[in-house]
Length: 470
Image (cartoon, rainbow, N blue to C red; front, top):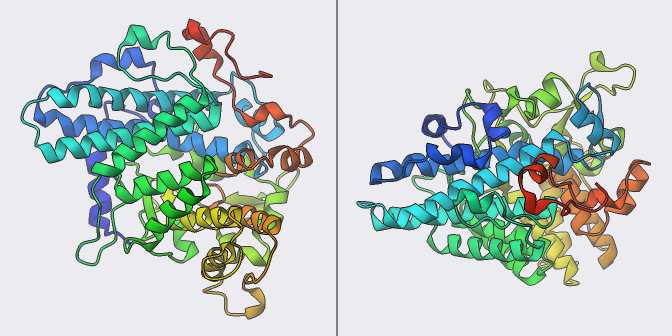
């Protein structure tokens, strides 16, 4: 694991970005036009602050994206009083949902800060060329990530490419395909100039900033979503074959920030920890228990084949009663604990991406088959289980259709409550089958999230552009 000194260093450095001062403001960003006068990039010494501001803005996408990805799907049931989460639990999402507003705001705040860097940085005197190239690559990586989240959540979104406030107030919705083309261009450009991030002195790569492997991981996920199986496999393989990461005990995935498996994750300080806000994961999942793991999810995650990945959840008999099944999610702690960060990419996902890409190409068994990658994760999930009868079953044979369902199930075990489930069901065409069996209120319109009603009221070019059914 990365040293505590390094972890505290990132916390202190990120505190510089407190022009986005509080957690609530990070998760519910103010309109972009209000932020315009807060940026100063006139001299070389300003670069570090604005660079950290881009990372701070991106942090605003992380918790809402996990909520969208896992609360929209079959992982949770409502257990509290907040309307936003009642809508998610009951599958009756509206365009007034606060999570939609928070994610949209996080996406476009990130895009705005990155555009600001990309516009201003070339003209700032005294910036070393190496720093200019790295910061430009980071801005393109973060902008690509924000647009990827926006397009895969809302479909078509405004293609914001400048910081011109008057223009941005009336940008119309571009197609999802157009946005995804820009995402690919940003990721590919970022890959060229991001640092390799190779380990030094035997320490793992610090995952708080973007590296070439973060860009490769982003490309692997991008190609998977685009059904480019060859490139998805190749990008994932490059990350897997690097010497920068290793699969850790799954309990460490749950309980430790910046562990040796982490490729890129967003870090928080005590003053901007997401656990203290209305969209904070620790607050929702542990403190208030506003939502709890669904009974269906619990049945799956405590199965033999999940193995040690059942550490994702915890049972407390004292919480049980009424509609409360007593289960809680353990992945997100408080500011005093070592697991309050949100992972964006880790090595386990790369094995799953490669397994799916291989299965889609008809390669199921053997050393370069899908089942081999799934077995790597199953072996890890049973590594500390003494009794053979309790270890996940290793896979030996399957048809292509069976292998793809095994990948889906393995993603449920491995990536639970990391923000993937709804996106997975939508991109594989499985949402209607799985979700209609889970909830009688599910309809196909929920395969896209609604554009926030406040954004339609604010931008006249979005009038009449709401996603179907909302």
